Length: 250
View (cartoon, rainbow, N blue to C red):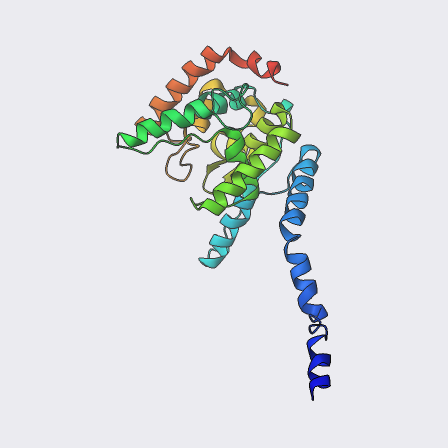
């Protein structure tokens, strides 16, 4: 009996089943795999024009879930040199006046927004165009920490792998300018029956004015708020240096 106990004490522990070991083996690699896929995704879209965005897909799904089978996304890509220079300039003037100098995050704007929100009143955001593009193109709405973390990661990738002009080009093509209306060309055709290359300064400013809430405000039939905001945007456009400002971007 003593000899049998000594034999058991020296025995090796039971082997972990191969299936369980394989599962844990891949689990720690999953974040690295996702990071690599996101890098390839962003790098590819530096050269390939996106056929759709995550926000377009989500909006189409919402319409189908609501039983609106006639709903269609309006989206028609145009290269930046076929879009009036006034539109990307208006977007920068309205949303991100430090776009040319920051690397994805405007720390001064974040601090000003924090101080403003601490005083109460209407909440002010501080998202840059790069952050908004990361959300619109790859992610979803909401304020969860998971989404914010993914937005920060995609923002870093976009700013690292794309030149500034490409960021603006994609942004003005996938931004929502009305319910189901995405991008400069779709907005220009839907509202004024013209190509995006023919947009005037005022029309571009009105499109940029509705960007915070494109389903609430109308660029085609602007109310007092959009009119005031468009005038403010046009002043900022002139302060930035006018249409030639775009050529200074790398």
